[in-house]
Length: 200
Image (cartoon, rainbow, N blue to C red; front, side, top):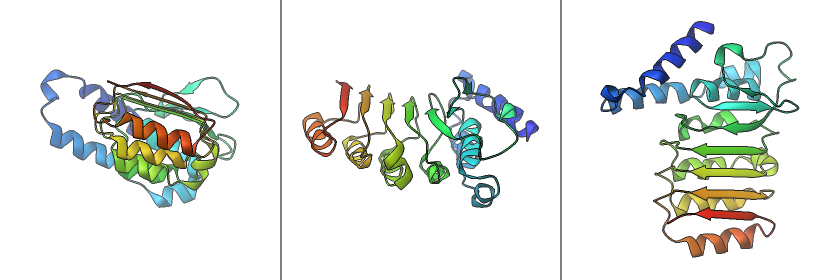
């Protein structure tokens, strides 16, 4: 487990080197491996632990219910009772999470905040799948989507299913063109929503 965490961190650092930027196929393949859902693992350790491993493996961070510190290091994931650590917030800034990994989040019941910033693999189908997760529909209160170039209005309209969503921040989404229709759908479906748009 520790060895995998160290290798994962080193590979994520390599992605930032300019001479490796053209090898998209390799990084796409590697990110697909990182995102693959292991349903046996979820059954063995529970949804929160399995989702934590997935998120940290992909470069995201998590914060557990009742804690102020963000969990950033895969090798320092808490041990002990698996029921004790429930994910309350996810910061996926610069992470490689993608749609095929979203099923890791299916059993999460306590997630109140998600930040998706510069998540290049996040697409409309990912947001649509995310918004179908029943437990997340109930728990999610805040969502930020920033600089995710593959997101369009179609994906954002699916966010209306987060019925308890109180705050939505959308910024730098070049694929979003029809903001009037989007605002109308979200405001009609979620009358208590505070919606902030920084879109061109």
